[in-house]
Image 1 (cartoon, rainbow, N blue to C red):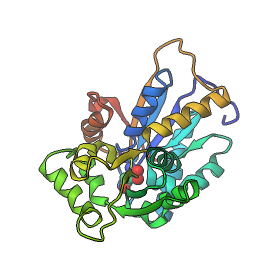
Image 2 (tube, rainbow, N blue to C red):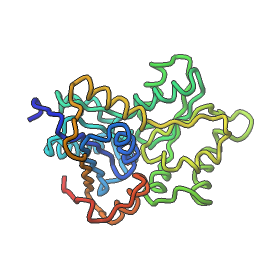
Image 3 (cartoon, protein in one colour):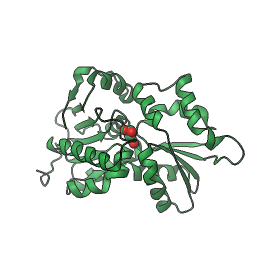
Image 4 (tube, rainbow, N blue to C red):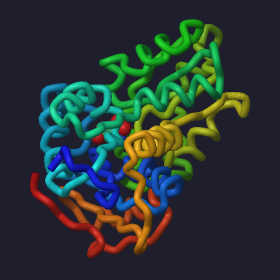
Length: 277
Ligand code: DGL
């Protein structure tokens, strides 16, 4: 099946939860004619606190499920899974194209601020692997990079607490050592190195100076998806409207409530298909 990709097949998008919907939204805006199937592994979220072996196993199972749905391309819309498992997934699923979000995120940040002091906000697992640091230093040797694990912000985003006093206080607490006091790192660029974090953009913006650029990987990942489709001649020519399928491994009601905010449209529990990996 994997050797016979056709333009009518959907693009598979995967994350541990609803965070990857920020990437799905960007892909949908860029490629409105593409069928999309999204899988959030909500039963096993968060990935960011798990060992690399567990994240790899989960990512293999999730992507195998999406492949069984006949996808023509896979987007790992999770920085943690991209940092831990992208190489293994690309090898295991070849010739299916598999696109991660770390490299596109690094490119977006460098384009916004070359040779800058970057601060990456990410999960524990992404920070432990130094994935962004490696990607940025490879692309821009003049840049400086620090990475900060902000695990509670994943829960905050999944809870839908995206603005207000509590949201701002959590973000401020994480960022304080980096922005307050003499000798603080004082980043010129914040990289949202977790796909859950763009939804917290207002809270993040409110605690840093307006001069600090804030970037995430959604737009640049969508651009990579678009150019890969073009290169492989896999763009869909619409005869009928594009379909969006939403799959989760647990909690359809919660997924619909919070996912709707991420996607910017109303979702009902009935819109979410529960799957077992
Ligand atoms: N959305 C995932 C990421 O981009 C992480 C959330 C989690 O910890 O599961 O890293």
